[in-house]
Image (cartoon, rainbow, N blue to C red):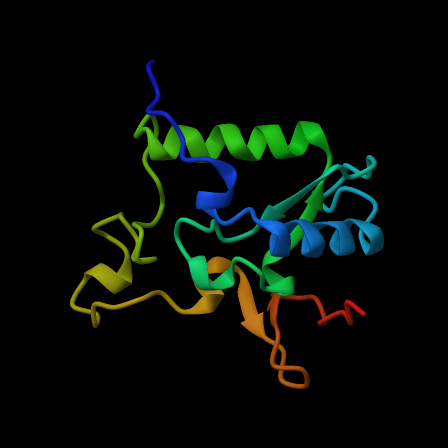
Length: 139
């Protein structure tokens, strides 16, 4: 079970810029955004992990507020996938790992569209948003 030592937070992208964005996000989204939870939020989670899409590290639409319990559950799942204790649905490029998936049956190989991550680009603001939600003005 020996997990490799993690890089320090600033090397993983959690710097002063992240801290300011996190505080601003929690100031607006005070409650856990996980369905049917509703507890007070204490963490800001990247919907698409920074390891998969570092370009979305500071994207407002790639964030969600979570309570400690929901965040720990999400982190544990991410760790299990990273340590290959369970099989991820997609590889690091976003392609499905299931060989029966239509994209793996003669489809063009490449990055998955944002919709595969449950994300879209808001046509008005151009911001990345979860599908089914409208972009919110963070200011």
